[in-house]
Image (cartoon, rainbow, N blue to C red; front, side, top):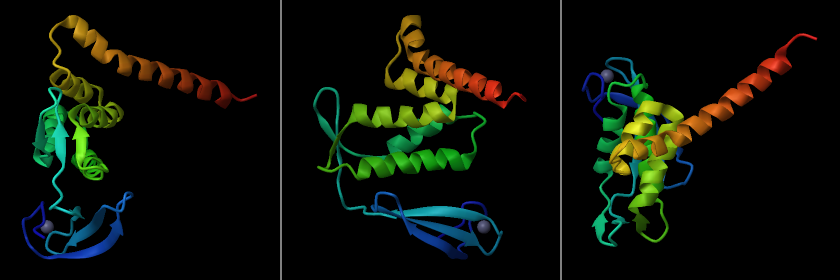
Length: 168
Ligand SMILES: [Zn+2]
């Protein structure tokens, strides 16, 4: 496998394990040329998954679309590259393990939004605005609701922790 950092094909597999679903093998590799580490995923390629779109038409699942959608949402955000790669890999893996070979495009959208909301508010909104096709400010306000709700819960929990942490 060519190293993503130095492009040299000289690595050693240091760890190899099955993904949580058992549908992917995750290999941790150590580049002997530049000493960096990277991860590869090995999965079944032949299985064609069909994505059911809103108008009920179907198209072959293209992992590349997931990748570009997520990368576009995370563009220039302070998110570690490895985190973006992890989210992309997880979503693709989740789609590929869907049982009957079909998955609704809405379900894929929700999976991505569930991941992005944990990662970065701006990335989440960017993705949501494209995916949900925000047309006006009301759509936008609707779109940020999950973030506001989450922040409220976090604030609430943080306050509780502080209160408990006070010396008696
Ligand atoms: Zn390297």
